[in-house]
Amino acid sequence: MKSHVRRLSLILILVLLMGALATISVAAQGDVAREDTVIFDIDQSDIPNPTNFNPLVPGTNRNQGAHQAMWEPLFILNYETGKIQPWLADSFDHNDAQDVWTLKLKKGATWSDGVPFTTDDVDFTINMLLNDKTVTLGNAGDMQQWVKSVKKIDDLTEEFDLKAPDPRFQLDYFSVRIWGSLMILPKHVWEGQDPFTFTFYDTAKGWPIGTGPYKLTSAAPTQFVWDRDDNWWGAKTGFHALPEPKRLIWIIAPSETIKAQLMEQHKLDSAMNITLGAFQAVQAANPNAIAWHKDLPYAWADPCPRELSLNTTVAPWTDPNMRKAISLLIDRNKDIQIAYQGTTTASQTMFVQYGGMAPYITAIVNAGYGISPTADVAGGQKLIEAAGYAKNSDGIYAKNGKTLALNIQTSTDTVEYALSTNEIVEQLRSAGIDATAQPLTGSTFDDNRHLGNYDAGWTLDTCGSVNEPWVSMDTLNPNWLQPIGTRANHDLQRWSGDGATAYGKIVDQIGSLPLGDPQIPGLVVQAYKYVYDETPVIPLVQAEKLVPFDTTYWTNWPTAENNYNHPATWWNSTHQIILNLHKAGS
Image 1 (tube, rainbow, N blue to C red):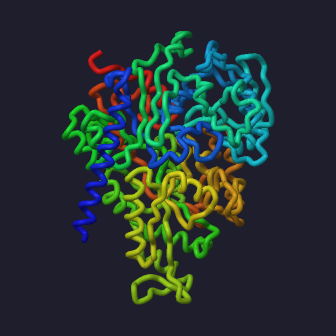
Image 2 (spheres, rainbow, N blue to C red; image 1 turned 30 degrees about the horizontal axis):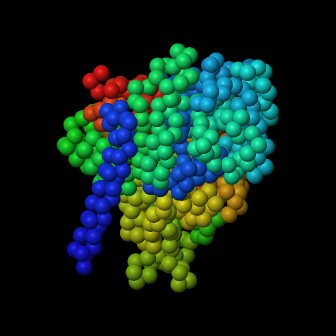
C-alpha cells in the first residue's frame, strides 16, 4: 500500500512538473524570445484572486510582479549602504521638531496611461486612508496613528502635519524598509471608487496601471506576464535607461522539487527560498546557478526572524508561565541542524541580528532577557507541572482528563515553514505536549492570524526593525488590540493586561525619541522585560534566504560581492534589480 501511495505521489509530481514547464514554455515564446524574458518565482502557494489589484484590501497579492515591475516606491532603503535612495520622489525633509515633513516629488514622473504623477495622487491616497473608519485598508492604521493632516503646496510638494514627532516617518512607510511601502494610487482612476471593493482591474481600460516600466499583459492563478513599457517616464527624463528585459514572468512553482527542476533546465531565472540540498543539486546540474554567497551558507540574511506566536486569549496559553514553558522546551540549535541544514543561527531576541541592532540586542542579553539556543526541558516541564498537569500513560501531559494540546498553524508558501514547524512539533511532543502542525494556504493562514482564529502560529509577526527597535516592538503594542473575530493590524497575539499596558507605554516613549537617542537602549531593556516575563512570542531562528539566480540568460544579479542592494526579488525594491540586469554576453 505504501509503495502504491509513493508511486501515485511521484506521478503527481511529474504531472505538476510537466504542466509547469509547458506553461512557462508557452509564455516565453510568441513575440518575445526566451533570451529577452526574465522568469521569477512567486513566494506563495496560491493566489486566490489573480485579477484583484487593489493593494489596500487584505489578501491582495503584490509580489506577483505588481510592486516589483508596475508600482514604484517613493524611496528605496539600500541595505548595503544604509542610505535611502530617491525613486519617485527627490526628498522628504522634516522640521526641527520632526512633526512636519515636506515631500518633494520627482519632476516628469507619469502613470503608464500618460497622466502626470503629482501631489494630487499623494493627497488623495493619504486622505482616503485617514478617512477609513474601519481602519482595515492597508496602512490606514499607520497613517491615522501619525498623520493629523496633509496639504498640497504645489504639484510636486506635499506637506504632512503629524500628531507627534516621528523621526522614522519616511523610513517606516515610504522607503521599502521591509518588503513593501505605502502605495500611492492614481487619483484619476480611484476617485469615486469604493476602496473596499474596487479591484483596479479592467483590461478594456488598461487597468491596473502604475508608474513602473512594465505593464500587465496577462494574469492567471499560477502565472503573471508583464511587458516593457517603452514610454516609461524614467527613460524619458533621464532617471534611468529602459530596462533590458522586454518581458517579465512570475510563476508559482508548486514545490521545491519543481523549482529546482525548472532552474536546472534554465526555465526559472530567479527562484525563491530553497534548502541547501536543493541548491546544491541545482548547481550540480546547472553551473550557471549562483546565490548571495559563493560558499556556505550561500544565503542572505532576511530581516524577518522566525518565531512562534501564541494566542494569549486561548487557555491554557492565557498563562504566561505556560507560554514560557513552550519556549524552554524548544531546542533552536536542533531546529537549525534539521530544518535548516546548518544555514542559519538561533535568535537571541525577537530582533533581526543586523549590525545596527547590536546595541539593543546586547543590552537585552546583558540584562538576562535573552533566549538560550538550547532547550531546558526540565525547566519547561516544571512550569507545566506547577500548573497542575501530569503525564498520562502515553507520556502526554493532561489535567482533568484533557490532554495539553497545541495546534501550530503554518503557511505552505515555502518548504522552510513546513520543515521548521514539523521539527518544533516533534520536540514538543517528545517533551509531553500533544502538538500538531496544521499547514494552510498563505491566504487562509494570514486571515486566521489577523482574526485571532488560531492557538499558535509559526510566524514572522514582529518583523520590522532593521536599524532601530521601535518598529518591531510596536507590533506587540496593545494599542493595536482587537477582539477575536475583528481584523487586527498588529498585536496578533492579542496580548493585554498590566504587563502589556506597561510595555506599550514604554514603546510609545521610544517612538517619540530621535533615532540614536542615548535613552533608547535602556528603555528597550525596560520594555523587553515584559516580553521575556510574559512571552507573547517565542523567538526561534534568524531568517536565512537561499535565493538562487540563473546567469544563463541574465547577469548582474545582486550578490555579496556585487552588492548594489539586497537580493529580495519579492520586495518593492526589485525595481532596482530589474534595472541592473544585463543580457548574458552583452
